[in-house]
Length: 358
Image (cartoon, rainbow, N blue to C red; front, side):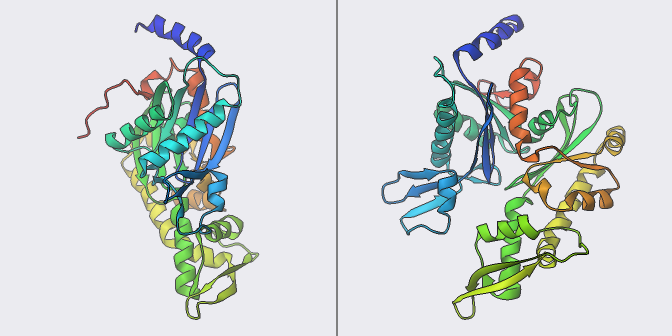
Protein backbone atom coordinates (compact mmCIF):
# COMPACT_ATOMS: atom_id res chain seq x y z
CA UNK A 1 0.00 0.00 0.00
CA UNK A 2 1.43 3.46 -0.86
CA UNK A 3 2.51 5.70 1.99
CA UNK A 4 -0.34 8.17 1.34
CA UNK A 5 -2.83 5.31 1.36
CA UNK A 6 -1.44 4.10 4.68
CA UNK A 7 -1.86 7.54 6.23
CA UNK A 8 -5.49 7.74 5.11
CA UNK A 9 -6.04 4.18 6.37
CA UNK A 10 -4.51 5.02 9.75
CA UNK A 11 -6.91 7.95 10.14
CA UNK A 12 -10.06 6.10 9.07
CA UNK A 13 -9.54 2.71 10.73
CA UNK A 14 -9.61 4.05 14.33
CA UNK A 15 -13.21 5.15 13.61
CA UNK A 16 -14.12 1.57 12.71
CA UNK A 17 -12.10 -0.39 15.28
CA UNK A 18 -10.42 0.01 18.65
CA UNK A 19 -6.67 0.40 19.12
CA UNK A 20 -5.34 -1.66 22.03
CA UNK A 21 -1.81 -1.73 23.45
CA UNK A 22 -0.72 -4.68 25.59
CA UNK A 23 2.28 -4.99 27.89
CA UNK A 24 2.37 -8.78 28.12
CA UNK A 25 4.33 -9.37 31.31
CA UNK A 26 5.34 -12.47 33.24
CA UNK A 27 3.87 -11.02 36.45
CA UNK A 28 1.31 -8.45 35.30
CA UNK A 29 -0.35 -7.61 31.98
CA UNK A 30 -1.39 -4.02 31.29
CA UNK A 31 -3.85 -2.99 28.59
CA UNK A 32 -3.99 0.46 26.99
CA UNK A 33 -7.12 1.54 25.11
CA UNK A 34 -6.70 4.45 22.74
CA UNK A 35 -8.76 7.39 23.95
CA UNK A 36 -9.09 5.94 27.47
CA UNK A 37 -5.53 5.29 28.64
CA UNK A 38 -4.54 2.24 30.71
CA UNK A 39 -7.80 0.45 31.48
CA UNK A 40 -6.53 -2.92 32.80
CA UNK A 41 -3.67 -3.92 35.08
CA UNK A 42 -4.08 -7.53 36.13
CA UNK A 43 -1.78 -10.37 37.24
CA UNK A 44 -0.76 -12.76 34.42
CA UNK A 45 -2.36 -15.70 36.22
CA UNK A 46 -5.06 -18.09 35.01
CA UNK A 47 -6.91 -20.65 37.15
CA UNK A 48 -7.70 -23.85 35.22
CA UNK A 49 -9.97 -26.74 36.20
CA UNK A 50 -7.90 -29.77 35.20
CA UNK A 51 -10.91 -32.08 35.26
CA UNK A 52 -12.87 -30.11 32.66
CA UNK A 53 -10.06 -28.09 31.05
CA UNK A 54 -12.12 -24.91 31.56
CA UNK A 55 -10.88 -21.53 32.77
CA UNK A 56 -12.08 -20.81 36.32
CA UNK A 57 -10.77 -17.26 36.72
CA UNK A 58 -8.23 -14.84 35.23
CA UNK A 59 -6.18 -12.00 36.71
CA UNK A 60 -6.76 -10.80 40.28
CA UNK A 61 -9.21 -13.61 41.08
CA UNK A 62 -6.79 -16.26 39.84
CA UNK A 63 -3.86 -14.76 41.75
CA UNK A 64 -5.81 -14.98 45.00
CA UNK A 65 -6.07 -18.71 44.33
CA UNK A 66 -2.29 -19.28 44.14
CA UNK A 67 -1.44 -21.94 46.73
CA UNK A 68 -5.05 -22.08 47.94
CA UNK A 69 -6.82 -24.36 45.45
CA UNK A 70 -7.96 -28.01 45.55
CA UNK A 71 -5.84 -30.43 43.55
CA UNK A 72 -8.01 -30.30 40.41
CA UNK A 73 -7.84 -26.49 40.13
CA UNK A 74 -4.42 -25.12 39.24
CA UNK A 75 -3.50 -21.44 39.16
CA UNK A 76 -0.87 -21.13 36.42
CA UNK A 77 1.30 -18.39 35.02
CA UNK A 78 1.15 -18.94 31.23
CA UNK A 79 4.24 -16.79 30.62
CA UNK A 80 7.72 -17.74 31.74
CA UNK A 81 10.62 -15.29 31.42
CA UNK A 82 8.46 -13.00 29.31
CA UNK A 83 7.53 -15.57 26.66
CA UNK A 84 4.58 -17.91 26.20
CA UNK A 85 4.91 -21.29 27.91
CA UNK A 86 1.27 -22.34 27.58
CA UNK A 87 -0.18 -21.18 24.26
CA UNK A 88 -3.84 -22.09 24.84
CA UNK A 89 -4.02 -20.53 28.31
CA UNK A 90 -2.27 -17.36 27.07
CA UNK A 91 -4.77 -17.14 24.23
CA UNK A 92 -7.66 -17.42 26.69
CA UNK A 93 -6.13 -14.74 28.90
CA UNK A 94 -5.58 -12.34 25.99
CA UNK A 95 -9.10 -12.94 24.68
CA UNK A 96 -10.50 -12.11 28.14
CA UNK A 97 -8.39 -8.94 28.46
CA UNK A 98 -9.18 -7.68 24.94
CA UNK A 99 -12.91 -8.25 25.45
CA UNK A 100 -12.81 -6.59 28.88
CA UNK A 101 -11.04 -3.54 27.41
CA UNK A 102 -13.51 -3.23 24.53
CA UNK A 103 -16.46 -3.45 26.92
CA UNK A 104 -15.38 -0.04 28.24
CA UNK A 105 -16.24 1.70 24.93
CA UNK A 106 -18.94 1.50 22.30
CA UNK A 107 -18.78 -1.53 19.99
CA UNK A 108 -16.90 -1.01 16.70
CA UNK A 109 -17.49 -2.70 13.34
CA UNK A 110 -14.04 -4.26 12.98
CA UNK A 111 -11.81 -6.21 15.36
CA UNK A 112 -9.13 -4.22 17.20
CA UNK A 113 -5.61 -3.34 16.10
CA UNK A 114 -3.17 -4.46 18.77
CA UNK A 115 0.39 -3.38 19.57
CA UNK A 116 2.00 -5.81 22.01
CA UNK A 117 5.33 -5.52 23.79
CA UNK A 118 7.72 -8.47 24.11
CA UNK A 119 11.21 -8.76 25.66
CA UNK A 120 14.20 -8.03 23.45
CA UNK A 121 16.16 -11.01 22.19
CA UNK A 122 13.27 -13.47 21.90
CA UNK A 123 13.42 -15.94 19.01
CA UNK A 124 11.35 -15.72 15.84
CA UNK A 125 9.35 -18.75 16.98
CA UNK A 126 8.48 -16.99 20.24
CA UNK A 127 7.50 -13.83 18.35
CA UNK A 128 5.28 -15.81 16.03
CA UNK A 129 3.65 -17.51 19.03
CA UNK A 130 2.76 -14.09 20.49
CA UNK A 131 1.38 -12.88 17.13
CA UNK A 132 -0.71 -16.02 16.69
CA UNK A 133 -2.06 -15.88 20.25
CA UNK A 134 -3.16 -12.23 19.86
CA UNK A 135 -4.65 -12.91 16.42
CA UNK A 136 -6.58 -15.92 17.72
CA UNK A 137 -7.80 -13.80 20.65
CA UNK A 138 -9.69 -11.59 18.20
CA UNK A 139 -7.25 -8.96 16.92
CA UNK A 140 -7.64 -7.74 13.33
CA UNK A 141 -4.04 -6.57 13.05
CA UNK A 142 -1.07 -7.25 15.30
CA UNK A 143 2.09 -5.19 15.70
CA UNK A 144 4.98 -6.31 17.89
CA UNK A 145 7.43 -3.94 19.57
CA UNK A 146 10.38 -4.72 21.80
CA UNK A 147 9.62 -3.67 25.37
CA UNK A 148 12.68 -1.45 25.97
CA UNK A 149 11.78 0.55 22.84
CA UNK A 150 8.13 0.88 23.91
CA UNK A 151 9.21 1.87 27.43
CA UNK A 152 11.62 4.51 26.10
CA UNK A 153 8.85 5.96 23.93
CA UNK A 154 6.48 5.81 26.91
CA UNK A 155 8.78 7.95 29.06
CA UNK A 156 9.43 10.30 26.10
CA UNK A 157 13.10 9.54 25.48
CA UNK A 158 14.17 10.99 22.10
CA UNK A 159 15.11 7.65 20.54
CA UNK A 160 14.72 9.03 16.99
CA UNK A 161 17.69 11.35 17.52
CA UNK A 162 21.28 10.35 16.63
CA UNK A 163 22.54 9.97 20.19
CA UNK A 164 22.46 7.23 22.79
CA UNK A 165 19.64 6.58 25.28
CA UNK A 166 20.02 3.82 27.86
CA UNK A 167 17.05 2.15 29.51
CA UNK A 168 16.78 -0.79 31.91
CA UNK A 169 13.37 -2.47 32.10
CA UNK A 170 13.23 -4.67 35.22
CA UNK A 171 10.12 -6.81 34.87
CA UNK A 172 8.84 -9.93 36.59
CA UNK A 173 10.50 -12.66 34.52
CA UNK A 174 13.31 -10.81 32.74
CA UNK A 175 15.22 -7.55 32.69
CA UNK A 176 16.02 -5.78 29.42
CA UNK A 177 19.18 -3.70 29.32
CA UNK A 178 19.22 -1.67 26.10
CA UNK A 179 20.96 1.27 24.48
CA UNK A 180 18.87 2.93 21.78
CA UNK A 181 19.60 5.41 18.99
CA UNK A 182 17.95 6.37 15.70
CA UNK A 183 14.82 4.24 16.30
CA UNK A 184 16.87 1.10 16.89
CA UNK A 185 18.66 -1.01 19.46
CA UNK A 186 22.43 -0.45 19.38
CA UNK A 187 23.28 -2.92 22.14
CA UNK A 188 20.95 -4.98 24.32
CA UNK A 189 20.90 -7.87 26.71
CA UNK A 190 17.98 -9.79 28.17
CA UNK A 191 18.67 -11.48 31.51
CA UNK A 192 16.57 -13.68 33.79
CA UNK A 193 17.32 -11.59 36.87
CA UNK A 194 14.11 -9.74 37.74
CA UNK A 195 11.24 -9.63 40.21
CA UNK A 196 10.43 -13.36 40.22
CA UNK A 197 14.11 -14.26 40.70
CA UNK A 198 14.29 -11.90 43.67
CA UNK A 199 11.21 -13.57 45.20
CA UNK A 200 12.73 -17.03 44.74
CA UNK A 201 16.00 -15.82 46.31
CA UNK A 202 14.08 -14.72 49.40
CA UNK A 203 12.22 -18.07 49.60
CA UNK A 204 15.51 -20.01 49.30
CA UNK A 205 17.31 -17.85 51.87
CA UNK A 206 14.56 -18.19 54.50
CA UNK A 207 14.37 -21.93 53.87
CA UNK A 208 18.14 -22.39 54.24
CA UNK A 209 18.77 -19.97 57.11
CA UNK A 210 15.61 -20.35 59.19
CA UNK A 211 14.31 -23.76 58.02
CA UNK A 212 10.97 -22.10 57.28
CA UNK A 213 9.02 -22.58 54.04
CA UNK A 214 7.11 -19.54 52.74
CA UNK A 215 5.13 -18.94 49.54
CA UNK A 216 5.66 -16.57 46.60
CA UNK A 217 3.15 -14.02 47.89
CA UNK A 218 4.88 -13.75 51.28
CA UNK A 219 8.27 -13.35 49.58
CA UNK A 220 6.92 -10.62 47.32
CA UNK A 221 5.44 -8.76 50.30
CA UNK A 222 8.80 -8.93 52.10
CA UNK A 223 10.62 -7.58 49.03
CA UNK A 224 8.20 -4.68 48.64
CA UNK A 225 7.85 -3.75 52.31
CA UNK A 226 11.37 -4.07 53.75
CA UNK A 227 13.54 -5.00 50.75
CA UNK A 228 16.54 -2.78 49.98
CA UNK A 229 19.97 -3.12 48.40
CA UNK A 230 21.86 -0.60 50.56
CA UNK A 231 22.06 -0.70 54.36
CA UNK A 232 20.29 2.13 56.21
CA UNK A 233 20.70 3.62 59.68
CA UNK A 234 17.26 2.46 60.78
CA UNK A 235 16.51 -1.26 60.88
CA UNK A 236 13.38 -2.54 59.14
CA UNK A 237 11.71 -5.78 60.13
CA UNK A 238 8.57 -7.76 59.42
CA UNK A 239 6.88 -10.73 61.04
CA UNK A 240 6.05 -13.63 58.71
CA UNK A 241 4.40 -17.02 59.09
CA UNK A 242 5.49 -20.22 57.39
CA UNK A 243 5.89 -23.96 57.85
CA UNK A 244 8.70 -25.19 60.06
CA UNK A 245 10.59 -27.76 57.96
CA UNK A 246 11.82 -29.55 61.08
CA UNK A 247 8.52 -30.02 62.93
CA UNK A 248 6.11 -29.54 60.02
CA UNK A 249 4.11 -27.11 62.18
CA UNK A 250 3.31 -23.41 61.56
CA UNK A 251 5.91 -20.98 62.87
CA UNK A 252 6.28 -17.20 63.05
CA UNK A 253 9.65 -15.44 62.70
CA UNK A 254 11.02 -11.91 62.30
CA UNK A 255 12.82 -11.03 59.04
CA UNK A 256 14.94 -7.88 58.78
CA UNK A 257 16.03 -5.72 55.85
CA UNK A 258 19.57 -7.09 56.23
CA UNK A 259 18.20 -10.61 55.67
CA UNK A 260 16.61 -9.47 52.41
CA UNK A 261 19.84 -7.78 51.28
CA UNK A 262 21.75 -11.00 51.98
CA UNK A 263 19.13 -13.02 50.09
CA UNK A 264 19.37 -10.75 47.03
CA UNK A 265 23.13 -10.17 47.09
CA UNK A 266 24.13 -12.79 44.50
CA UNK A 267 21.44 -11.80 42.00
CA UNK A 268 22.15 -8.10 42.43
CA UNK A 269 25.88 -8.72 41.81
CA UNK A 270 25.04 -10.61 38.59
CA UNK A 271 22.65 -7.81 37.59
CA UNK A 272 25.40 -5.19 38.00
CA UNK A 273 27.86 -7.30 36.00
CA UNK A 274 25.34 -7.65 33.15
CA UNK A 275 24.93 -3.87 32.93
CA UNK A 276 28.70 -3.46 32.96
CA UNK A 277 29.01 -6.04 30.14
CA UNK A 278 26.59 -4.05 27.98
CA UNK A 279 28.49 -0.80 28.61
CA UNK A 280 31.79 -2.48 27.73
CA UNK A 281 30.60 -3.31 24.19
CA UNK A 282 28.88 0.04 23.59
CA UNK A 283 30.49 2.28 20.91
CA UNK A 284 32.50 5.09 22.59
CA UNK A 285 30.46 8.00 21.19
CA UNK A 286 27.20 6.49 22.37
CA UNK A 287 28.73 5.61 25.75
CA UNK A 288 29.65 9.27 26.11
CA UNK A 289 26.00 10.20 25.48
CA UNK A 290 24.86 7.73 28.15
CA UNK A 291 27.33 9.12 30.68
CA UNK A 292 26.01 12.64 30.05
CA UNK A 293 22.31 11.81 29.84
CA UNK A 294 22.15 9.02 32.44
CA UNK A 295 20.34 5.66 32.61
CA UNK A 296 16.56 5.38 32.99
CA UNK A 297 14.92 2.62 35.05
CA UNK A 298 11.42 1.30 34.29
CA UNK A 299 9.40 -1.76 35.32
CA UNK A 300 8.33 -2.92 38.77
CA UNK A 301 11.90 -3.81 39.77
CA UNK A 302 12.88 -0.14 39.47
CA UNK A 303 10.97 0.42 42.72
CA UNK A 304 13.31 -1.85 44.75
CA UNK A 305 14.54 0.48 47.47
CA UNK A 306 17.90 2.20 46.83
CA UNK A 307 18.56 0.31 43.58
CA UNK A 308 19.11 3.61 41.79
CA UNK A 309 21.70 4.69 44.39
CA UNK A 310 23.53 1.37 44.15
CA UNK A 311 23.69 1.58 40.35
CA UNK A 312 24.85 5.19 40.44
CA UNK A 313 27.64 4.40 42.93
CA UNK A 314 28.75 1.32 40.99
CA UNK A 315 28.59 2.71 37.43
CA UNK A 316 29.42 6.37 38.14
CA UNK A 317 26.55 7.34 35.82
CA UNK A 318 23.40 9.31 36.80
CA UNK A 319 20.40 7.00 37.35
CA UNK A 320 16.78 8.15 36.97
CA UNK A 321 13.65 6.22 37.94
CA UNK A 322 10.94 7.02 35.41
CA UNK A 323 7.63 8.47 36.57
CA UNK A 324 5.19 5.59 37.07
CA UNK A 325 7.75 2.99 35.89
CA UNK A 326 5.23 0.12 35.96
CA UNK A 327 3.19 1.58 33.10
CA UNK A 328 6.00 2.77 30.80
CA UNK A 329 5.61 0.02 28.17
CA UNK A 330 1.81 0.32 28.05
CA UNK A 331 2.04 4.10 27.73
CA UNK A 332 4.57 3.61 24.94
CA UNK A 333 2.06 1.58 22.92
CA UNK A 334 -0.32 4.53 23.22
CA UNK A 335 2.26 6.94 21.79
CA UNK A 336 2.96 4.45 18.97
CA UNK A 337 -0.71 4.46 17.97
CA UNK A 338 -0.70 8.26 17.87
CA UNK A 339 2.37 8.32 15.58
CA UNK A 340 2.11 4.97 13.80
CA UNK A 341 3.56 6.31 10.54
CA UNK A 342 6.59 7.88 12.26
CA UNK A 343 7.47 4.69 14.13
CA UNK A 344 6.65 2.16 11.41
CA UNK A 345 10.28 1.05 11.13
CA UNK A 346 10.43 -0.25 14.73
CA UNK A 347 7.21 -2.29 14.58
CA UNK A 348 6.88 -5.85 13.31
CA UNK A 349 3.51 -6.31 11.60
CA UNK A 350 1.76 -9.68 11.56
CA UNK A 351 1.99 -9.65 7.75
CA UNK A 352 5.73 -8.99 7.81
CA UNK A 353 8.16 -11.79 7.13
CA UNK A 354 10.28 -12.26 10.23
CA UNK A 355 14.03 -12.25 9.47
CA UNK A 356 15.81 -15.55 9.84
CA UNK A 357 17.94 -15.82 12.97
CA UNK A 358 21.61 -16.35 12.35
